[in-house]
Amino acid sequence: MVVLERSFISIIADLLFCLMKSFFVYSAGQLKYTRPYLIELVYLDGIQISNLTLIDSPSWNVHPIYSSNIIIQGITIHAPVRSRNTDGINLDSCTNTRIEDSYIVSRDDCVAVKSSWDEYGIAYGMQTQQLVIRRLTCISPTTAVIALGSEMSGGIQDVRAEDVAINSKSGVRIKTGVGRGGFVKDIYVKGFTMHTMKWPFWMMGNYGSHLDDNWDPNAIPVI
Ligand SMILES: *[C@@H]1O[C@H](CO)[C@@H](O)[C@H](O)[C@H]1NC(C)=O
Image (cartoon, rainbow, N blue to C red):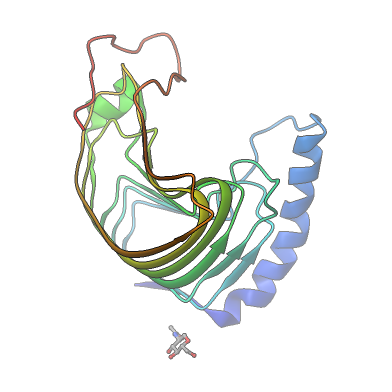
């Protein structure tokens, strides 16, 4: 069991000072490398992240990938609403996750649910499944509270969200396109309080970007 909690805050504060600079360098087009994620967890089983405040991440804030049995609770995430790709919690090919009692402000999606990209995601075939989101407050003026995709080629299923308060452009947003393959199914939401909402539910089937030219034009996602 990996437990990240308050005692880590001072370490993270030092890290943040270095990391946040990279966003401004990115904006100026001067960055030579990809912006780093703030917390990246790969191939873990049994993770708890509690009671942390994450400020000004240069890119995605919390990114568990290929992991299972995850609890994320009592997290405050604050990214400037002009900073691109600063997703709050970005869950990628993970099984059995609970996200609760959290507050997220971001320019990008508050919770992004993913399962890898195009032909690579189809070949790997690792779903994101059994996700529960509850008691979340999300401020994300131009994107979504819960986004499914656009990388969803391994499949996404069994997502339940309840008691979510929102100030965003959309509530639940599915992003996909030809070549993505995979599926999105069994998504339930309940008790959403929506403010300044443009689209409570928003789906795009022409989310065009591809990783490279090897994507399969016959890989049609099933939604
Ligand atoms: C997080 O904070 C809450 C409220 O103060 C407390 O009840 C809980 O035990 C804390 N969690 C951890 C893992 O310290």
